[in-house]
Length: 252
Length: 87
Image (cartoon, rainbow over all chains, first blue to last red):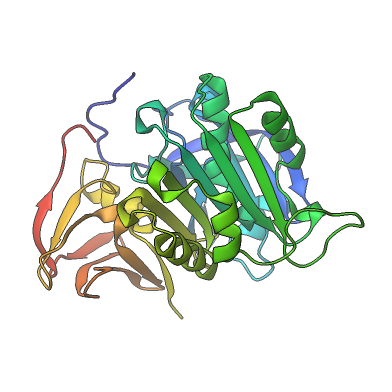
């Protein structure tokens, strides 16, 4: 297993946009070529900095969606927040060939790689799927057979990010199970969950506590707190539950 | 307005100050003596900076801000900071 030794202080670097792709009506993936990229691990994030003509700067954190195997290309998936300072620029204005200032990779706590093991329970709310997708893509790229379940809450079918890719990953790997819940609108004939995440749902989907699952939860703050508290009541060890909350300032 | 996030949210600014990955750094809280990973703390993001609090005792562990080219770091709630060279 590759081990980086000293990371050094983070500095800002420029990446060039080499591709953009709409994922859902409100999210877009942005792929950057980063000549000075030192490599990342699945689950890490970057800080993006925009500078206005008058010198005003705004920084936001975005999770990396792509697995380490694709470096030095790095893909972020950004959700457009209508009143956001940064995300509308990234989703609406940024074009292939543009340059973007960022620093990273950041974080080592909310990271999954082979030695971390499993079984894995990934719990995503909305764009909280992004760092968990990096883990699933990395898991597939290295051929891991760690038993993994993803519980993914979206507002509606069209709001499911990476829907088709998740379906393919789910079909291709017997050790992976993807479970969706749609909280606001369900298509005709929907047989999946149709409510916000709760303890009953987690009891049905999560690995039993005696299997000592490793849990990664990412989503809006209330979502993460509900999921984490429910899992603790079901007997999961708090030390095995890693959370990444995002709020309006986080703009993950 | 402030938003409760995780210590991970302060990792960028902390790694701009310290030459290490900081979310795995272990912090011992002066308030309750608990030792935890920075990533497991609670982070509150304000316009002026970030406050990390102990998830057990709510003690303010760290305040950090970057204002006009200067880092401000207040570590009042940290009794011991352990950083692994391995990152």
